[in-house]
Length: 567
Ligand code: ADA
Image (spheres, rainbow, N blue to C red):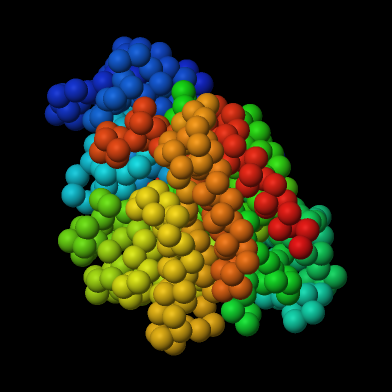
């Protein structure tokens, strides 16, 4: 995995990033013509990337085949894909080894008893949409395709450690934590071994385990008490180094101890009330799409820190692990969600059992892969669905039950665009609403935000949720970078800046509102479906343009957010 530290020192790993070859499959004939059986002789590209970066493929939707040769040292080979958009089949030397759906989560395949020597890895990657896709074709981001995140080959031996999750409960005074690790093991050779765990170099747990060859199983290590806990917080993002090892393998990770909860109707972090000063961010670059370059992740984070934010909403899908590592290091909070997004998800789509199951798998993958990141304080279940219907009520209930069965250490929410008839708020720790008064509809001069907040608060109280905090998970207006005119002129920087500053002042001074998430950090390319209402086919509600040049709204939000920080 591409992280900000090495996950393995003992395990033999090799990055498969770099040169690959691709061949587009316009007629979708690759499988029937068995393209996986021999070399594709396609054109060279660099992975990770989106194919939309390459000539002639900017708007291509369908299947593209990828191929790479590498030296296999033999034995148990594990292939780890951190993100392939959106679905893919994988072959090794012409043998089908697996399929994965979902563009934003990592997956792996383990192939035992492989031969030593040069081998050929082939992928059929497809970004088409159908009635069961997550997301649906109607999204407000671009339809990218390709191997968008890193690929790694690993060779496993003995008892290998595939993943680990640390669950902990902090004492009331936060001085100590009762901790337990659950690890996922793989029997590359099978047999007995000891799994040991250290935190910052100090051994904290050990267990013996037997595993069969080819078996994948989860094991809980004995729980232990960690005294003198140094908390992770935005001010002091203290991280602990986790090392898990067997006699033949190792896995490094980092974690931090913190407590997020709602108390007396307000979010509290480590016992202290916290106001969320947030921004929505797409992991998107104007030239490179969702294969977002590492070097620019840090730049984005610095710009968001300067803005005075303490939280980012990863709208609308799990972000690269590397970005989460950065947030862990710098004390930035994060809301992570799956791409069940808006308009495309009509009630009938969400009523489909396959779609619901797919969403559940995405939740399962997100929770498992991001479990140890202290920066993630919120899991998001969905965004702007028909949450006034029983279908979505039942779906939300099941998703919430699932998340609660895996992790009770974070807040769980969804973002509603129909707060006045939504029936799902009981499943959300914060009532999160997306509203665009001042843009759709264009009526912010008549105090619609103030009126809305009154109505919404009254509705929550009536429903018996008088203790439920409100967050404005999206609000904003579009402005074309460099377009200047009066404050009442739509699409101008002045209009956007004025709207955002009025909103921030209002939300900050409304006691029931505990956070605001500006829509959005930067402009970004959008889909054909959404593009009709979007100048340049971009969502222009960024407070910076797509090249991270500040609009007036960035400066206004920076002034206000940094001011709120001091209060
Ligand atoms: C919705 C949606 C965002 C974006 C926004 C907009 O609230 O959740 O992804 O599309 O609208 O710009 O209209």
